Length: 486
Ligand code: SF4
Image (cartoon, rainbow, N blue to C red; front, side):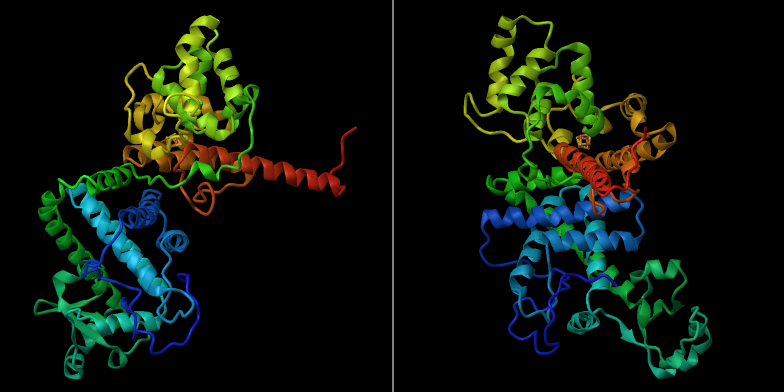
C-alpha cells in the first residue's frame, strides 16, 4: 500500500503534547492564532496544487489507485503530513499549514455553487487518499477520537438478522465475528446503491469493512454545510483589500483547473539563438506557442498581446535580448528599420527589464493565459484549447502535430476533455501522444503523472526528453553497440 511520507518512531503516547493530535482532520475548528498574509497565501497555493491534480485525475478518468499514487506524490511535495508516530519532523507545523490551507480555500471557494461542488469533491478525495494511506493505528486513534453517530449492532440483533447480514456477499467472513454499525440510511447512499448494507427501520447495517463510507460521507456533509455558512458570512470580508485579491486569484486558478505551479526559475537556463526557434517550435512548443510562431511566420506580424505572450515565453526559454531583437526584426520583415525601432523595439527591451519600470517579467503560466486578456477574433494569443472553436482546434492540432504522431483518432478524447473545461489536461494528453515515440505513456503526463501548468515547463520537459535520448544513443555508439552503415 502507498504511504504518506512518514518517519518511523514509537507507536504510543505520541498524542500527548501535540496541538493537532491526528493526521486525519474533519476541519471543524478553524485556526484561531495569528496568520501572516504570506502564510495565508502559500498554504492555500500549496493545497490548491494538490487539489488541482486531483481534479486532473478525474478529468483523465484515472482509477482510484492511480489517483492515489499521484495524489500522495503531490502531497509529499507540497503539503507533507507525517504520521503521529514520527519523531523527527514538526508534525504540529505540518498540520497547522494543512489546516490554514484548507480554511483559506474554503473562503475562496464558497462563493458559487460550482466552486463549492468541485472543492467538496476534491477535498473529500484528498481525505479519502489520506485515510486509505495512513497506518491502522493512525486511523484507529482518529476514529476513536470522534463520534460518528453510529450505533454498534448488538449480538441479539446479529442473531435476529443473521441471514440478511450473511447475504451481504460476505464470502468466508462470519457474521458472528464481524462488527456491524447502524447509521441512518441517508448517510450512506453509496453503500445503499451498491447493495452493501442491510436496511431495517430507517437504519443501514454497515459491516466494519465498509465503515470508511460513513466517515467519507460525514466529511463531505460537514464540508458542504460549512461552505454554505462561510458563503453567508463572506460579504463581511468584501472590504478587506489585503485578502480579497488573494482569494479572487485562488478561485480563478481553480476554475481554470490550473494552479500557477511551475516557476520559470526552474528552467535550465540554456541559451537559444534566434535561428533555432522555428525548428524548436515544431518539436517542443505547446499549442499556444506553436500557434503564435505559425502566425508570425505567415503574417510577419503579431498584435500586442501575442508579442507579449510569445516574447516572454522565448525569453524564459533562454533567448537573450540581442537574439530577441534579431528574431523579431527578421520576423517583422514587412517593416522598415525605422518602423521597427519606433514601434516595437522599446516593448521588446521593456519585457527584458531594460526600459520603463525595469521589471524582469517571467513567462506567462497557463493560468494567466487561460484567464486574462481574452483574445478577440483577430488575435492569436491565448490558449487554443480554450479559445479556439472545436472545428478550428481539430484542424490546428492536426496541422501542428500530425508529424509527431497525433491522428484524427486521438481527437474525440481531446475534444471531450476540452468540452469539460479541462484545457491543460487536453494539452497534457497531446504532450503524451506527441512524445509517445520517446517512450511517454498515457497517464504519465510531463513526468510522474503531472499535468502541464506552464508553457515553458512543457518545452523544457520536451527538450529534456530529446536530450536524454541523444545521450542514450551517444553512449551506445561509445560502447560500440551501434554498427554504422557502409
Ligand atoms: Fe499553452 Fe497551457 Fe494552453 Fe497548453 S494549456 S496550450 S501550455 S496555455
